Length: 82
Image 1 (spheres, rainbow, N blue to C red):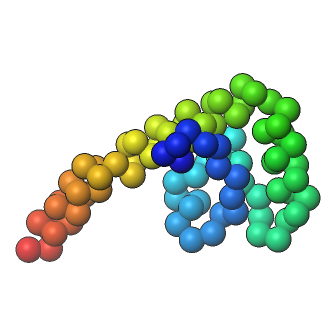
Image 2: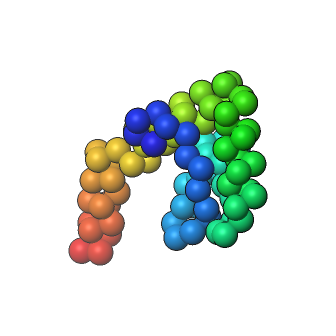
């Protein structure tokens, strides 16, 4: 995501909390080979969508996964515990 790359993934673990199909990623169900193939075809044929999803991935990476953001959240968490 931090390299402006469009994400095609399955909704496992914590990914559903941050990834939104068609807004910052393309999502298919685990084991759904046809779903993966369809998402790949969509990206190969739609330069605008590929650019839009890549930009959204980069923004998510820079904002949500930014070390300053994470450090601030951890600081708030630890402060609330103490």
